[in-house]
Image 1 (cartoon, rainbow, N blue to C red):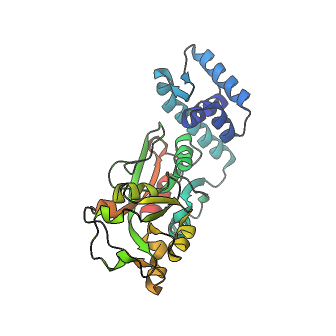
Image 2: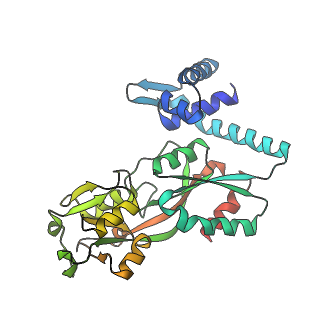
Length: 298
């Protein structure tokens, strides 16, 4: 059993296919397959169930997973101690919140631990961040979810012992161009949205998932793009949009967008997302991680 094999094993657990694991590790698929076969041979037990739709860990593979992470973390900690370098923490964040929420976190951490460096990694997709945290490629990540257990918004979680803290609420706003007929209403029913065009990003987007819960299926979904594109299309009257309030605050103040009322059936939890920081509970001993988490939640 070698550390390189354990890294490959963890990547396959996270990404579920040899091809995706190879791409994440920068290896050839044949090298990944060979490492998994060698590891299974060393244990004399299959570590994965192989199916056309991907690979899932067997019971033995699930037992190996926490040991693999502990051994890899121990090796990384030993390396850092030997070379006496400044600790570097890898923090991931969704692109939609990176500019608005991350700089304050980095400033607080610099004040508390000037010896700790933070390497920031941003992604448009949540799954990439969660997979990187699960695989140990990131120490922590900031993303959007709803109240309740992690993933309650409707996204899948990787097979890893993830923990999280809620940092703050992120209010949502249902907006449209000035003069939209629904803007004069004080309250809506979901059926009032029938025939309206809701501008959305990909189905995995947090605001797309929030719209599924909040607005149901009465409204037609029209693919637009990220926040900036969706907001611009809404300003031009191409449809209505469900976006974080921080992203449309200036437009609402200037009158280029108006706020639409919420459906009468909407609950308080549906009107808010939660900004969360996520990390592996079994990696809290990584040098500097606790300080970064304290900086995030302060």
